[in-house]
Image (cartoon, rainbow, N blue to C red; front, top):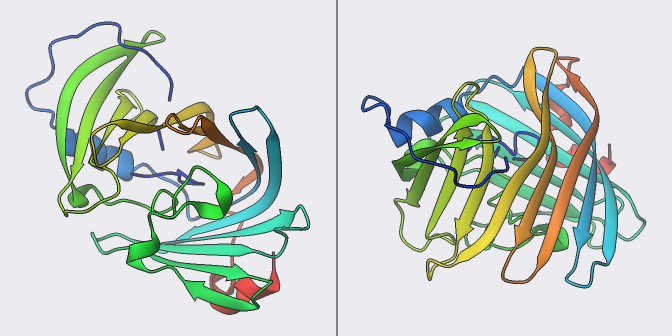
Length: 258
């Protein structure tokens, strides 16, 4: 699902009615259009990540993010710039246009080494947040079976509601349900269900706008409803198509900081 492009794609609403669905529209077609949303050749932005526990206590982290679309592969790198206990940590993700698994790396300055994220570790939570490593990547529509459940109107805006079930066994989520705006194919909200088919997390897009002709998600919340813990991500100083060098997306660059 296209992103968490700058982390992620998905926005708020409640069930308000069922309409006749276009018999020619399928769940796969909807999710493919979400995945194919134009994102520009490259993007850079400043991120604020806020972790909120069940007592309401907050931990705030600052990051810089760079993304480049090279056609067959989309590359993303994130650098933690503050506070001191995470400064210098970096994460890199390469997503492919095919259904090939993402390649991911994390650099931990305390260990002074870059670690490749194995497929078995992609269900781990990223830096204490409510996003797993898998959530930070790009899931290709062909990796799931999609079913168009219904249409709903959200805040006066018609949406498709699509259920996606992983084709591969043993995935961390038994299914996801996504609400997608019919006019722009922006995902507004996504529910994640655990292996026991119980609601685990909800991803909600709080704010998005078009910048330099590209739809950009500016404010996102991932809430773990089972742990009553949430993570918000806000973008600022977003720049589109300003030119990000290929040398930015290397293991060497990860060790050098932003």
